[in-house]
Every structure is written in structure tokens, then in C-alpha cells.
Image (cartoon, rainbow, N blue to C red; front, side, top):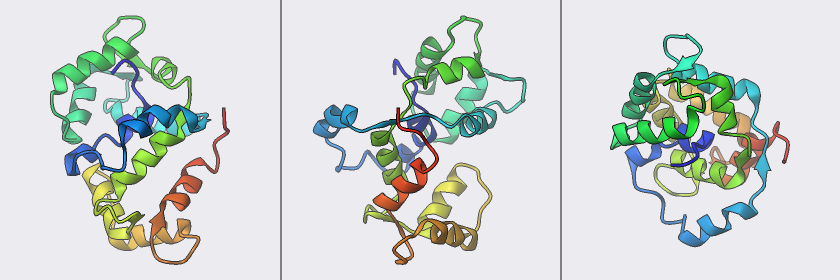
Length: 181
């Protein structure tokens, strides 16, 4: 992991539920540079950083990062922590500050990564995200939510009125306020 990607980190918990979906082939990965890159939203990036920075000291420690990886069900956590800090800790002080965190995302968020995130929420692999699936994934991430609350979230995104979030609706939701780089 020479580069830690925002969405790869945020949605790496998907491995806890199942292996990578069969829909993502090596050809998909080769073509991933054909997808547009979006400028990361600073407010959203700060919220992600703050979720990891449990003690709110403005720095992500190795223990804080290890805690998140364990919560996401990652294996070989010590190796992942070492690789992440080699890539991110530019001043070699043993911590990742917000500027270093943002430096990792200077090339933006790739639409391919957003598509991968979709499959992390689509637990039954039917091509759509239900309120139940959304609730299950959010709870695994430690979010407090109810199925009823998740139904409201789905309705807010569901433009075709079928009661689910499909890939197009998910892409539109995730990129509506982002600029293409």
C-alpha cells in the first residue's frame, strides 16, 4: 500500500463481510485510470480524520490507526499500520497530521473507488443497496442508526422510486458536490 486512498480506507471493511466482488476484474483495475478523479471535500476529509483521531490531539497515532483497522476486521494489522505510516508520515514523527493525511489524497478520489464503495454496501450483490444493508454496514462501522433512519436516507437518494439505491444513484450522491479534477 504505497498510497492510502480515502475510499479504500473508509470502505475497506467490506473484506470483513466477503471477498472482493467478482465484478471487479484485473481489467477493471487496469481501466480504473479511465474513471474521472474528483477533488476531495475538505469538510468530509476532516470528519474522517477526526473519526480516526480518537483522542482529538490533531494526530493519528499508530495505536489509533490499529484500533480502526481491527474494528474493520482487517488482517495483518501490524503490517498495514507499518505500510500506512511509511506512506503517510512524511516528517517521520510517528504520527499522521491532517496535512499529511490530505497529501495522500492530492490526486483526488477516483470514481472507480466510489464504485468499489458501492459494492461494500451491496451485501447480497444484487446491484442495489437496501435500507437493511445500509443499516448493517453503518452499525459495523460503529454508527448509531436504525432501519427507519436508513429508509429515510435511501429515499433521499432513490430517484427512480424503487426503494433501493442503485449504482447510478450512488455515484450521483457521492459526486454531486465534488469537482472533477
